[in-house]
Length: 44
Length: 571
Image (cartoon, rainbow over all chains, first blue to last red; front, side, top):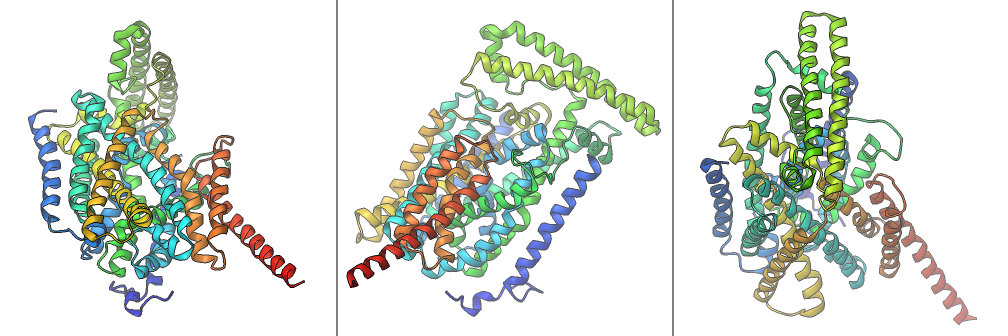
């Protein structure tokens, strides 16, 4: 099933496709895990 | 609670409910009642998805979990962003393209009616039971706070949510959730800053973190490969992803939230909002619990936080033993406080040997206090085996009542109540919709008018509300409340997810193979649950993998049998 092209527009400045949005979410996840791992390491 | 607190509680809850009923009074056709008026923007969807997942249990029990076990539970949510991306990229476009009311309608399109009924049936079974648990949690809070009877609290809170969910349908649920989560965030942020202000003078942020870390409360990420550990980064990323994928992708209480978006873009942005903010939100709530733990190292804390259960046993025969244990606990706490103040002073002076000595002495006192607490819990459990609620669930509410000012108490009790009603409303809305669309319209009345289905949907929603209230009244709840819900979800969710993943990705598999594979997999998960002691998150993966693998095997056997039959007929 293909998605209509209009639905591929994110409407977010700097993000031209949903792939870019998903990549950004993955980067944010990696940053969160990294920060929490650092917190664990520093204060354990 | 005083008059101001009651005014905030009653005014806010009734005001939001009345506004939702008034705003959605014109929604009489089936589409707008079940899917909303298709005008919902991404922020409302995002908050609605968040509010449906974050029940009163999240805000009541999670700080208690932070208090008792630290930050480790946050790992449970590491898989959520991954799952939300998959839902946004794969599930959502197909659901919207087919214009389905429920996720299980899609199973009917893809496979056959019996597989659709199986998916809907598993949802109704596990969510119907879960609905009872979510209504039980705020009842604990309110019955403790107000001295109400637990059963009366369950009935009153249950009936309020039934009233506006039945009246306004999907849009009423989304609208109330938006305002309710605003109240929740306001309450939690205010509690956080009041708590920071109440920490002892001179105890800076770094000191607080060092102190909490010394008690192993800041171990947020565990890289251990030990399967027996409930929360590790691996259970969180893999098991958590499967749990979140099942929940966000196949649980109608969530699917209904994002299907009401004005467009695919709005629905996707609402999901991405959750993908970004879910982990920080859970971290913040757990951190609140850790800070309460630090706060109680310098303040007198009860040996047992559930004072209702404590007072009852003191008055009914266990008083001497309990008071003796309380005295031991208080003495150990007092010593610990003294040593921690000495530790803080030595730390400020840069006197390392004195700092280490005071810390060791405080740890020893802490161990004695924990021993007295463990014995107290054992005495109370032996005296009242039916009292299986976790004492950690009472930590946050005890802190609120004992240490926060009036007005803020009212706001936080309102926040718990709002959280309870918001998730309950999402569940009831989904249960009513699934029963109407997948069971009633599909099996009983296929060609009735829209208005008939709206009436039936309201009736089923009300009926599920009553079932949830009854379950909450009679359920014997086990372990920590939030874990009970996740365990319940994990036992059923894996197989349902397997159905959907087969539907999306294994195009050659047909209805009969996946139906029997799902039934066999569910039996397998039940069998393993009662025989193994692995983290419950793994059951999502086991159920899903078993369903997919068995579907492949059964389809191959069916195809082989068909070809064999054809060959036999030819020869």
